[in-house]
Length: 392
Image 1 (cartoon, rainbow, N blue to C red):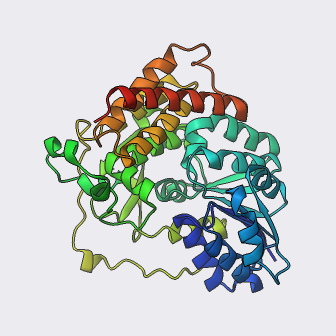
Image 2: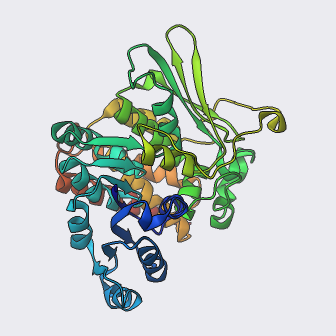
C-alpha cells in the first residue's frame, strides 16, 4: 500500500486531493502518514479521521490543545508549529503533496526532496524563491518532483519522454482573472471583494486575487523557467478566457501539442498521484461540440505589469525570485488590508526589486533555507515601506 503525506491539507488544493483520496477508498487504498493545516482545526481533524492519518499537525501552536481534543479517541498523534511540520516532512512516505501557500511551503518541500522522496509540487513559491536550490537537492538525492500547478502539469504531460531537445516554445495560458475585460483606468478603483471572484476556477482568496493581478501567472513564468530550464524567449503567455487549454508545447517541426481539460485541480493532482501511470478520475471529459470555440489573445502588460516583472526576474536570476515572491505577498497583504490600491501592488514589488538589486550578493542564488528567508524578510520590509509611504 502506497504511503503519502499532504502539507496544506485544508487549503483548496489539499481539499481537491482529499476528495480524490476518499473517492479512491481512503485508508483502504492509501496509508496516510501526515496531514498538516494552518488554523482550521475542525477540518484538519475531520480529514485526519477520514484518512486515519498517523500524524496531524496544525501550524498555529496555540491550537494544539484544540486539535488534541478533536482527535480524542483516535491513534493519531497531534502536533503543532513549524518544528512539527519539519518533523512530519522528514517522515518517510512514497508521495508527498506540497500545497502550503507562500514561502512557508518551501521548508517541507525541501525536506521531502532531501530524503529522496517524490514531491508533488503545488507550492509555486518554492521554485520562484529557491528553484536552483530545490532542483539541485532533488538531483543530489535522486528525488522526483512532479508539477501540480495545472499549467506546468500540462507542459509535463505534453513533453515527449520528458525531453526538451526539440521544444521551441511552451505556452502558459491565463484566464485573465476577474478584471480581464475591465477598462484599464477602472482598475485603480478595484476592491478586494471584486478581485476575489474568479470567473472560472474555485480557489483560495489570495490566489484568486493573484490571478486578477496576473502575479499568479508571473510566478508561473518563473516556475516554468526553473522547472524546465527554459529561457524567457521560449516561454509565452496567452490569455485564454475559457480556461480549457492549460498549456501548449510547440516543437521544432511546427507541431503544437495542447493539454485540454475542465478547470479542475483534480486533473493535475490525479496525474501526479498516479504517475507514471494514469487512473480514472471523477471528472467529466470535455464536450468540444458544446464548447463551440476557444479564444486566445496576447496579454496587455499595461493591465498586467506583473508579467514584465517576471521576465526581468528570469533575466536577473540570483535572489530576484525570492525578492519578487516575498514582496508580492506583502503587497497582497497591504491591498487586502486596504492600505494600498489594486494597481499599487506591482509598484510595491518593483520598488522591492530595485532596492534588493543594490544589496550584496543579489546576483547569487540562495543556497540555504536561511538565505532565502533573509531575502524574504528584507523584501517584505521594502514592500511594506513603499506601502506606508504611498498609503491610500
